[in-house]
Length: 359
Image (cartoon, rainbow, N blue to C red; front, side):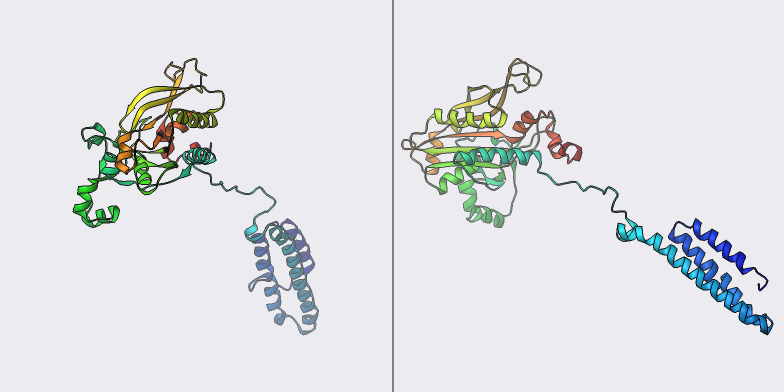
């Protein structure tokens, strides 16, 4: 080992250090020369084997070589670490484009509900919500829906089997008394039960909008779901007329679908309103000319409405000769599908980010 040309080692070190471009390579270089079994350690260990007058000079050369290697490693380390310091912990280059985080956004149904509720709030309506578990009285009887009506059948309504204690919690009375007064419990099939609840607890004048989920045992397909959303609205006071209903719904339709649309009211039948009407707007796709969306008719149905039936007023303790009012109800999914040109209701509930990111 003493026969090694230290000057040649210096030249070899200079050539190797220039080629190093990573921290692992620099560490390998340091171990090779300065490690416990490295070249410098071997040179130092060989000093006792030299003749006495050569030891001092050789030791000085080895020490100089050791210091030079340590200095080169330190300088090289600075050039390799500085970019990492600028980039931050973990060697991430902060100058590179980052990984963008997706921003959360409201579901399209929530956006439509908020938009419709905001329109009615500007007209002076208040927003009220009600329970999704309802009594048979509020869901049917109070709304003038007779016992023989098909909507009361088990094929059209989700009836519930609950213990007497739970029935008492939901109705505020004992189980037997609750069953006699309110009938069975069920998942509400529309938001109209809140109309009964509000009128039983408040006196006119009333102007209320009720958004919420409703449930019906429908087979799921492109236009049906067992759970969907509705918005119920009603106004009660003295001298409320059908013209008031038309005015309110016209403002709504033009605010949601655009001022250029046309509207029409078609006679219909609902047990809780008389007279009743379904409301259509001119097709927003073909502008009333006829297309596949509107079935070549040029019109799209958007909601049902009518004047509140006198029997409903009697059921809540209002005098039907003193008060009049109107009510309407719409499916939120139906409005959203028309507004955004969506042809499958299932898309709203599949949580596909590719679909949801569009809104």
